[in-house]
Image 1 (cartoon, one colour):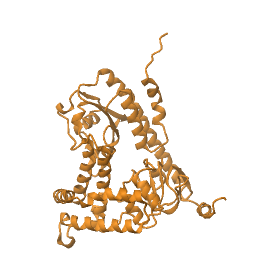
Image 2 (tube, helix red, strand yellow):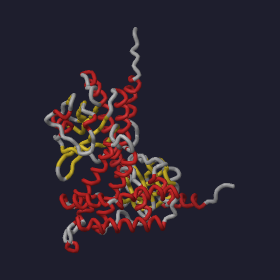
Image 3 (cartoon, helix red, strand yellow):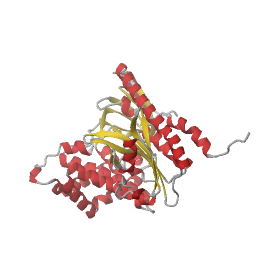
Length: 428
């Protein structure tokens, strides 16, 4: 009997195991994208998931390899639009040798998709409903074959499994939360910045939420006329934070680079123009998205551009908060973040005296934000699976940045024990 030798088989057999990992869904999907890219192979692999907002259903990129990390969460297509949306709407796979020639094709500004014209979209269907799309792309002269189509269909099952298990865990957590209301729950993550933090859980307001507080008649000025003064105020606020906090040399260097965007006259002009044309929240969101996607076009310096895009996103939120007079967090709060913060956001959280930061996504210990939070003494834990299932705004959270643990609704005894352990002198 002949045994088929194919190095891809081991990866294929491990896909269900990777899909079932008890990690935050974005991390699981990112891992699956890496596996699919290696198995096919493909230059770009993306997972879009269906989400709903006030304007209807959209397909939001939730994981990707091949494009900058800042594209994740910023690329969104109305359901049914583009080749990706068409595949979801008709619940049929679509394969194209030259995507741009398809009548359904819709270019995403700044993404640089023209470098990867070979396109294959496979709908992620669960319970007879399209919940997303798995998209794979290749450079020119490498079209997908019928065999590739069949393989992608098999690999898409791992995405279905991952989303199904994530939803199942979410429902179980909600059910158990109802039973365990008021009882402490321990969540395990990865320590990024040591220390102990105790505070009420708080979510950062979105641009849309901040815009709801915007009063167009403020001082009789249009929103675009408030951009310049707002940027100046944000700059002064951040400078005060840098002066007050005992930051290390590396952290100060990181912030010096990040702050260059504040001094960019072109950036301020773009902000005013977009806000004038679209309104406060849509205009700021358009700028953040543009910078996030521009990083995809750079052959060199992509990491620098990706970092800049993250800082622009944080700055847009800070500008909106300044205009409406609403701080991003309150002193003593335990801030919940879905994605890793940049250095400007980390500085803002430290300057506002947050007690702790908890990140559902992966935050490397050597990231600029990690260094700033450590220097500022803000207990920080990342890679926390089930964070948004078990905790909600207003919950009391106890965060141990050394052990990478988060307790939701900790008991008085737990808090007392944790504080006592922190006050004990180290063994001689």
